[in-house]
Amino acid sequence: MQLHLASLAFLASAVSVAKCWTPASSSGSDQTAAESLEILTEASADGSLKKHLATKGVEMMTERCSVQNAAVRREYSTLSNVEKLGYTRAVQCLMAKPAITPTDKAPGARSRYDDIVATHINQTWTIHRSGSFLAWHRQYVWTFEQALRNECGYKGYVPYWSWAKSSQDPLNSPYLDGSEYSQGGNGEFEPHNCTTGLPSRLLCIEPGEGDADLSMVGGGCVKKGPYAGVMANLTATVPSWPSITAKEPLSYGPRCIRHDISVPLARKWSGDEHIVDLLRNPLYQTDIGAFQDRLQYTGNDTVGWYGLHQFGHFLLNGDPAGDFFNSPNEPLFWLHHAMVDRVWWIWQNQKPVERAFQVAGTRTMNNKPPSEDATVDDTFDMGYNGGEVVIKDLVSTIAGPYCYIYL
Image 1 (spheres, helix red, strand yellow):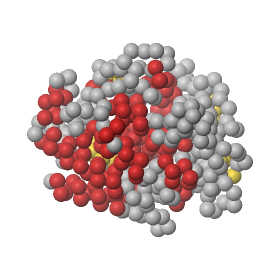
Image 2 (cartoon, rainbow, N blue to C red):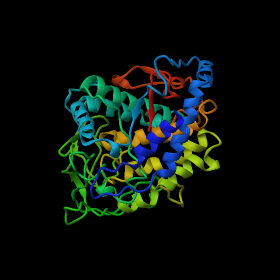
Image 3 (cartoon, one colour):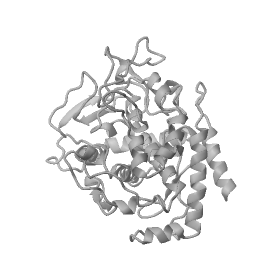
Image 4 (spheres, one colour):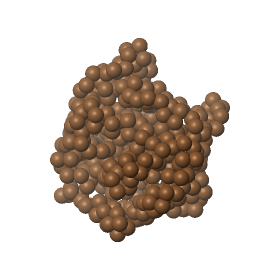
C-alpha cells in the first residue's frame, strides 16, 4: 500500500502533456504530499484519527470512506484532454444555468455560477485572514464541485493547479496557454501601467510579456480558451485594474475577464522552494496560525511579499482575479484554491491527529472590527448553494461530508 500510493503521487507529478512546455520541478512538495498521504493512511487504518475526531462529535465513517476508496483530486496538467474538456464544459454549464439567488439579495446574478460568486462577495470580510479562511474555502470549493457533479453531470473532481510546475513558463503551461484545454490565455492588448497587488502598494506588477501570438502585452479581454467571451456579471467591488469601476455591491456590472499574465511574478514567488518552505520550515510547523499566516503573507508597510495565496490571484494581473471580493469570477480561482486546500491537507496530514482541530484567528478579517477568536464550533453557510456547516466537520477530507484525497 505504501509503495503504491507514493508511486501514484510521483507519477502524477511527472506527467507533461503540453508539447512546447517543460514543467518546473515540484518534487519537493510532491514528496511531502506522498509522505503525508502515508501518515493519513496509517492514522485512518489504526483508528487513531477516527477516535480523535469523535471527541468532538465528528463522524468518520470508514465503511463509507477510506483513503483507498476516496475520490482523488488530481493536478490539472496530468488530466487527459477529454478530462479537461469535461471539467471546463461543466463550469460552462453552471455559467449557462439561471440564478436561484433572489434578485433582492443579488440583483446582478444571472447564472448559477453567479450564485456561487455572490456567496464569496457577501462573506469576504469574515473569510480572509480570519480563523475560518482555510475551512471556509475548503467547503466553498467542495460546494462548487458538488454543483458541477449534481447539476451539470460532471464525473470528475475539481483539479488543482501546481504553482511550482508553471512557475518558469506560465504562458505555455496547460493552465494558461489559451488552448481549448486550458483555463484561458492572455488578454488582448490594453495600455496600462503596473498594477497594485499588495495592501502596502509595494511591488506593483509590471505589464506582462503578452501572448506569443500578439505583438504587445495583454491586459484586455481574454479571447482564447474555453471561457473566451465569458462575462463577469456581478459588479466589481474593489478592482485592482485601472479601467474597471465598482458599482453598487452585487448589482449588475457585466465586463469581460481580463488577463495580463506576469512571468516575473511567477518565477520569483511560486517555485517549489516556497511551497517546501511553508511545509517544512520549523517556523510554520508550530501551529496552524503560523502556517496560515505565512500562506497569506503579503509583507508589511516597508517590505512587500507575494505569499502563495496572493500570488495565485495576481499572476493573472487582471480583472476579476485581482478583486478579492469577486475573485471566483475568474475560472482559475477553483484550481488555485484547490491547491491552497491541498497545501493545507499536506500540512494537516503530517500530524493528522494533532492538527485536526487547530484553528487560529478571529472571526473578522485582520480582526477589524475586533471580534472573538474563532473556534471549531463556529458555523457558516454557502448561501443559496448549501446549508449551514460547522468548522469541526470540515477538518478532515475523509470525515464529515467529505471523502477525497490529493495526488
